Image 1: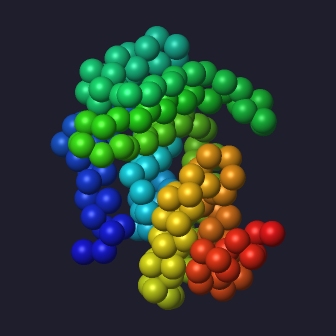
Image 2: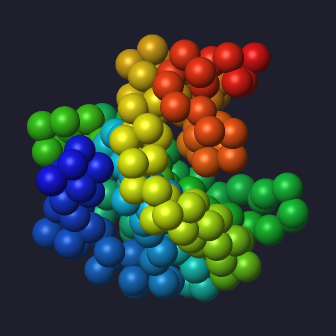
Length: 182
């Protein structure tokens, strides 16, 4: 089992054993996206988009209660906001140590069109990786290097930066990534 598969197996504890997916189904249709969906997990990060059909401020409070009681977050944020397209979206983000390791979980309530675009992006990346499975190691290695230097996901470099560099520009190492992004 590679590192990505091991992290994904740990994520399944949140999703299934702790009931996160079942709870989210009360608010809309959940779609697991990001590195979990693409089988290229480099760190303990779970991204779920939920169709924004039934979310309201009351349900935001209800889901907040579930998250706090179930996952005992060390950081938690929940909010309603209007995105750049003028659409109302809802966000729940939390970090927890409940499994003994730090985990970041992001829950976004979007319209179906936004979720479809995210899923199409994930499928495009997955299709490229299926043609060359060795790219999983390259991608996760670069992500891990950035994570170790606190340069990943903190406003500096994103997954899209790494995917673009590796999949579209044949970048193979962290040093090549730094050269590419300059």
